[in-house]
Image (cartoon, rainbow, N blue to C red; front, side):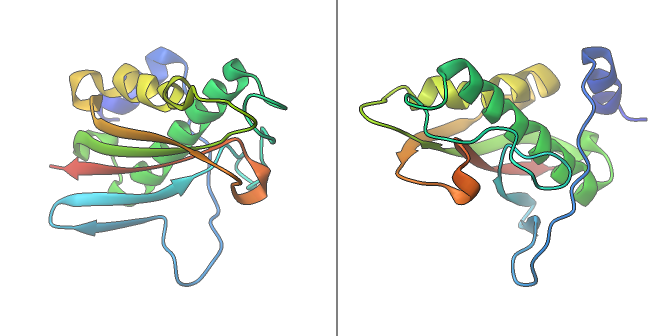
Amino acid sequence: MGNIENRLKQLGITLPKKDRKGKGAVPAKEAGGLLYVSAQLPTDENGTPLFTGRVGTEVSLEDAYAAARQCGLNALRCIADYTGDLDHVESVVKVLGLVNSGGDFSSQPAVINGFSDLMLEVFGERGMHARSAMGAYNLPQNVPVSVECIVKLR
């Protein structure tokens, strides 16, 4: 068990299993030492959304933060499945978070902090990253948040 897996265990974090369906898109693609992780949704291991609705109307900021954290857990699972060991992550480089925003909701960065805070919690300084947090009119399965990331591998 690697250092990051031990850290997850200390934090009481269990990564969900993922069964991604689809032929053309892959969960992650490596190029030039960077791993591009496809958009992660706040779903369980069966792909069922754990949260649905627009943030600021049907979904609270607190629940949206939790949804972004779930996206992070799913991203970690995806990275672990691809690399075999999260210790292969040298750093989290870039994150793009989309928030299914209702009305005049404008706190997208506070939502995506759920993802960013998890990366910092798990990887320490290696989890610090550049980030964009943007509003979206609608997201797949009516989830409140979707997050993709790029990580540098060792």
